[in-house]
Length: 179
Image (cartoon, rainbow, N blue to C red; front, side, top):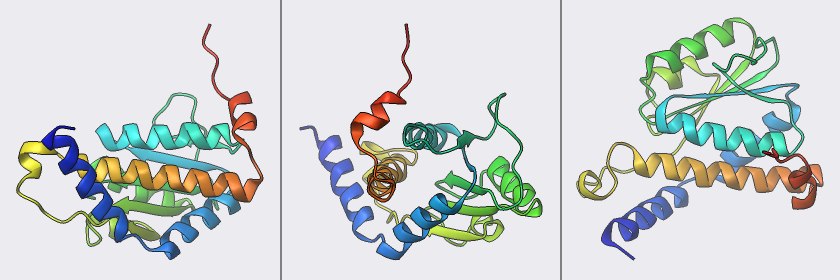
């Protein structure tokens, strides 16, 4: 294993250790209650969002990624999950403000619990990522947040599987087949 891999794994494990079970439970409950779930993120955070959205679609949930051409309109009582490391991405903040005015619940997942996105959201899931100077060499530009968010969200998928009584075989049946 390289120094970078060791560093990243150590940092992600430390970030996940700070997560609270009530945050996980809150997110799971709101996903299960929602008629539709919308996901939004930009850049690599957006890539983590899409991975999460794919798994939820495979669970049979109505999930959409904001910004895709076939995404329906967000409506009252829908759930919007917005992921941003800094919580200062302008399009994320604007999206939160717009969909809240429409009556949707907005859950932000961010490393900055006092960011503009956090203030625009209905609630915040804080992924604590301590500053570490070695990140500049081994995990630059938000790598620790992004990987921590992906692992956190994959854990949410596992909990949703249990609550929905889903098995991997059922998810596989909803898996995209490319020919």
